[in-house]
Length: 112
Length: 114
Image 1 (cartoon, each protein chain N blue to C red):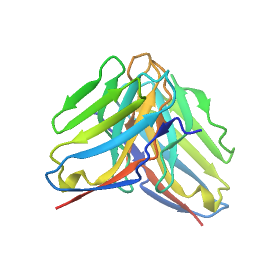
Image 2 (image 1 turned 135 degrees about the horizontal axis):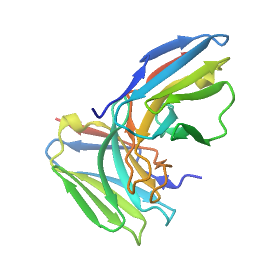
Image 3 (image 1 turned 30 degrees about the vertical axis):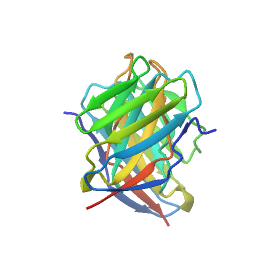
Image 4 (image 1 turned 180 degrees about the vertical axis):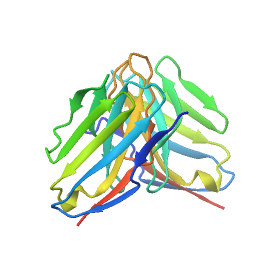
């Protein structure tokens, strides 16, 4: 049972434009959400996170938005750069638990 | 030091071989994880060690045997694997007893079983 879903397997965006990656979850007990970026044959690297007490968190070009009522989060990348081309996974966890539930990933291609 | 180091980076083994994957972190993290990832799929949790004790085993076949010799090291012993076990094996770590944990991943071991 996939508790975290990323319904878009791939996304292509022109360099300089905004990339929006979406993630939905089903478990209302999740209260912490993370985005990871992954290049082929490498481990995922942490990008940005948000706790359920916030609805927005920003770090440079990356902003994550959380809509708890819709059980939806999104990652905005502005402006998109070719080096952002990678697979992006969203993940969710519950308070101090050490289990993380990953979405299926969205492959982002930024076209120069 | 915010690194999780995994060795080897690549491993090719036959179905009768015995091999081990190694993972090391020096961030003082007390939780360590093994994940398996196939192409175009999310990381799939295999094992979690908390304070050097196995706390989660996601019904992994016994041909995979984890070991945590101390708080910095994590091994995964492999024996009699099948070709379908070919995947990227990721080690990760996190602090324990803290709200809003982050996972720190190593770069993985790309395993091919022939």
